[in-house]
Image (cartoon, rainbow, N blue to C red; front, side, top):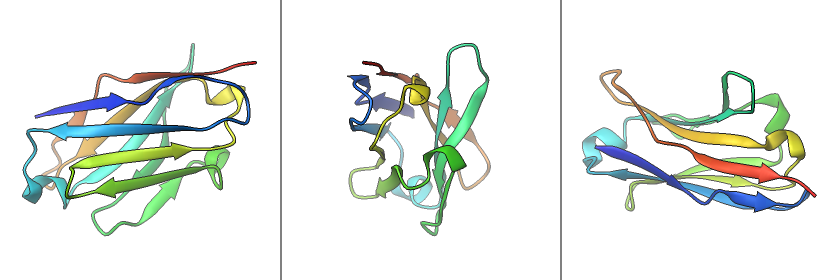
Length: 118
């Protein structure tokens, strides 16, 4: 099983990006009951939770992104998305996808770089 992130890039403040995390090789019985999350590791800082979605599709967001970011999952495609709007320079960093499986197995993707700068 691999988690492969994509969709990062450079954008001006106020812009939008949509990150995607593809769960390659993961079976539906693991994907569906998992908790999925996106983390941000800003330059010089520790990795921090940005957004998560539970098996029951309950979402949780960091205060800094509430109202701007939205996490979604597509069970048919086995993908998890992070829609990021109204981006700010402080949203810059590497975004990681995290899977916590139904038996507490944890997997991370390799990360995708997001740079917000004018």
